[in-house]
Amino acid sequence: MAKWNRSATMTRLQSAARLARTALASRLLDHGFYAGQDQIMLALSELDGQTPGQLAARLGVRPPTITKTINRLQAQGVLDKRSSDADARQAHVFLTERGRDAIRAIEKSVRKTEKQAFRGLDKKEQKALGKLLARIEGNLSPDAAEIEDDAEE
Image 1 (cartoon, one colour):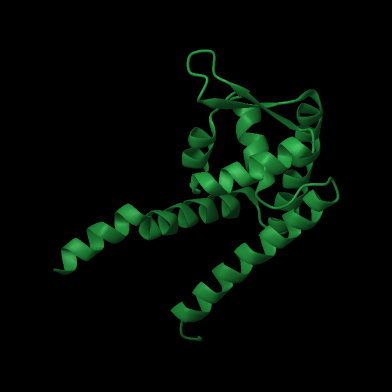
Image 2: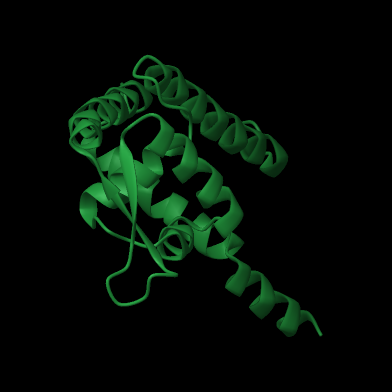
């Protein structure tokens, strides 16, 4: 039996993530969206009217990145920024009617990519993979790294 190779496993994990992003990006491009824009659109479909700061925190990106993407999506006519009723300095982001229509295409692209990625894996294997990836995410989260660094001292 071949010896397990941690480095090869990490390389495969990174490769699978990159290929999944590429497959989804290709499908999204068919609908006029770039990678990352879908996450903002889907976050707003769950809770419309978030501030750019709320979206950045929710998606784990920096506010300048969100602002640039929001501006591009606004230029495409799928988002609208409006000043807050309570504080005119604060903007809230909303899906337009065109944006709500685009959500269906984005969700379909995500489902097709999921179907492609999980082809040949039964439900039990998919669930086990999900649990393992959640543990890896936990191990790699910034909080976990700080805990590990403290334990080594």
